[in-house]
Image (tube, rainbow, N blue to C red):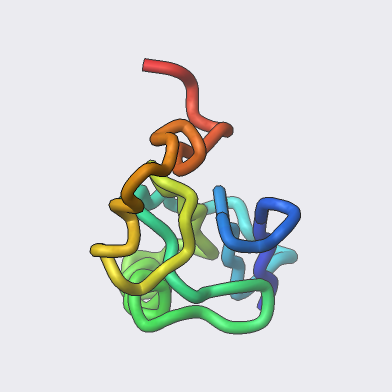
Length: 98
């Protein structure tokens, strides 16, 4: 199993996660897009990504890429709306501008 993550330097934001259960044969990967990342990291998947991994395995994939529209890592959606915060600070800088 292999998890590759792209975090901000302070690790409060995660911009992408790549999860492969068979890195030697990872030709078939799926892309999943979510609103904001939760607690998953290089060592452990969170409940949502555990479900995505199970679904992807059943469909014959070797792994998945998880991208998020917002980068703030939190399991609580209310925290995504930070009063006074610049919306640009929350947006995933790896996504193309709209």
